[in-house]
Length: 178
Length: 152
Length: 138
Image 1 (cartoon, chains in turn red, blue, yellow):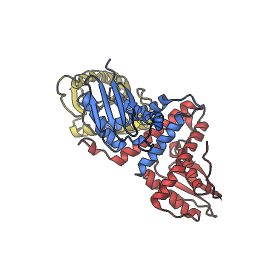
Image 2 (tube, chains in turn yellow, purple, blue):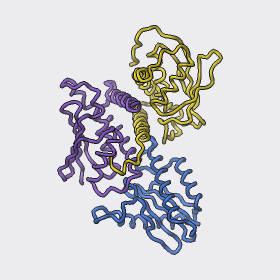
Image 3 (cartoon, chains in turn brown, cyan, yellow):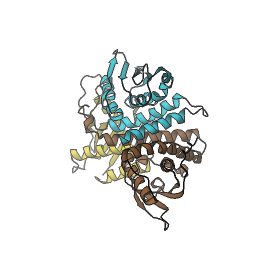
Image 4 (cartoon, helix red, strand yellow):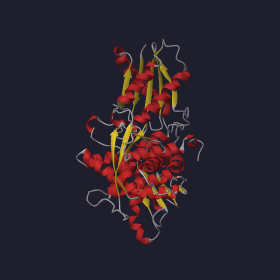
């Protein structure tokens, strides 16, 4: 590498590359679909597909044993964010039954540089994340609901993703969503 | 590398999205997504570097530093006819290495290089060089990118 | 104390301009346009060795009341900063720092996927940050 570029931080560049590529995808989708809700669904679906692939890599990388309950699952998800996105969300707001919790993010690499236009308040820009969590967990026989409670892009202080256990799935390979 | 697989997954999903038979999309959309990404990315990457002297120096930057940062390797070969035609050769192009080599897969190869064609075209465009970028895949995973500078 | 910051795009289309003194706005715009001519001279490719490999161009010219500084990115975007001559406290390295910060702010602003390159910069975030940059040295 030339002397010039050695000043550039490879990890940071990778993160920025991801951010910019994702942004280009989102804006393309907004051109393709009439309304933001359709885009939200598409982003979720893409996230879901990615989650199903990433979980295999995650399991291979961490040789994690099966999670017996949600607290372990939460830790694994936190670990996955560290590994793949280099961020550490905090786990909080557990429900009394310990079947529901929040992931709270101070920063979100996908939304770095993003300023949401005022007419797109119902766009869930980071919907790929909730889809990803759902897809990944479904591959390990956990059906969950995942949704955004707070979003920094919409003026909240933090971005908060809520994860709720729905049920354990039978040991069949779930069909990918089309 | 964990970041690599994440991006590879995203790239694959973008390819699928663009080429979904339900929509009227084709490689041009995929190329455009690459274009707008490259355009913005180069703005960031060239922040810390000193001024490029000429077109050749700009091309060299793309083929060394830019390629290294995005694709974790330098290109294997850069040739030019000194009249605005450049051929960039990568013997193990990142998005082709996951496809099994073989002539049957060749017809799918364009899907995996379109984004990069746009990426390079976008980067050059922001640096003041208007070009046409195409890719030639004769045997997976090797790829040649043809950059033709429009000098009008 | 007049202070003006301008961002001009590749084809010399103005993308952003702000000044701390609205009364002098017209005069400052004139200075910015004149400065662009000087920038063109300094950056002509093929004119032999460029004067400097640096992006920072330094003092472009001065008038009785103003000093005009310039900076050109590798992507041909120009930043012009106009400073009141009476502001003698502002040193060279502080001017460089202004441009460095402006460069950072600009690259972040255009990386907003909703920004279309070539259009004026209407980002509130960018504007707020540039205002802070101006008042930090005013």
